[in-house]
Length: 407
Image (cartoon, rainbow, N blue to C red; front, side, top):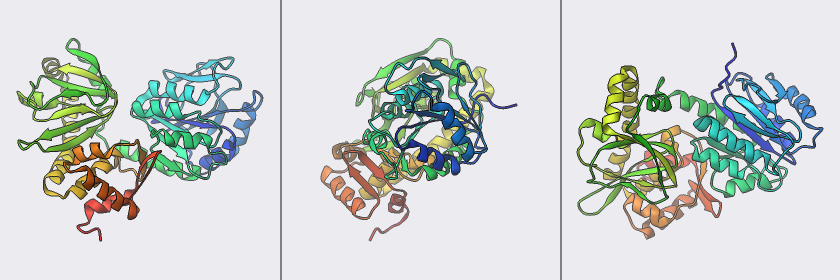
């Protein structure tokens, strides 16, 4: 029986010049990925069914025009209907006619992010204007992954707008995106099987609440009472520890789907480190007592939760040892890789939002002038690029950590 819930749902937006990008993407795409693909195009009202016919010649997957209440199946390609808004409602499509917006790609990607969270992938291909940019932002804030077409785009308005926003993970030609999607799938598959945080949290009754934290606000400070566990629903959180001499070390960067603050479950009375919001965050706060009761009731979930924490803390150990024993140059390299999720997902190269050198200096535990020196050095060596659109991290930056000498 075909799955209604694919591994990932990939929303693909394009306008002028998009057809050649769709073809190149599908030509390189295996037909049994376990994902569903939804194409939202700026087309004339009569063109949608013809697009489905054209694209069906470039894939063994079934290509069809989406319709109201149609289930979203793995290994299928869907094309948005003419003159409509297409959204996701649970595991099916919702169609609103006639179209109500000039940005149908944004509308669908936002709906996709809300519906499937981390399982959402957004791709912005060739086209005019900036449709798709806001959708990429929503996908990133909900833990998903985003792509934009590189300079191969026939019309670069849409992909350049998305890249400039700082909410694009990968900038690639259409024919290379399928390989990156496969790597993404393999990285997800290596995570702890059987642990569904939302299912686990649903077993907790009283003792949990949603809290909103603004960018740069303190979630908790080192030395405070250790009385709750946090789960990130949206945003990015930085965990750090402060020495008696006032030096701060970054322990880890947490993203949607991560837990933090679980030291209270191991008997900690006071927080051994602090937590700060790097972006606007939506967190679930679970009281220690409620969490302990849930773990006691759900033995199987307790086991996988423990495995999840162990797998995550192995990476934290490496980060902390690095901060203690390595040079500020290597610490900066690791921080940049953490910001781009290299240490977490093993992905090749990404664009991350702009971040000030003062902030980087605080995270690394050095001066702004030293950070400026190292950033210029990394740029000269081809490890990074940066401009008004953000900071691009290349996989070659790993050599800064792995090699003893950079000369």
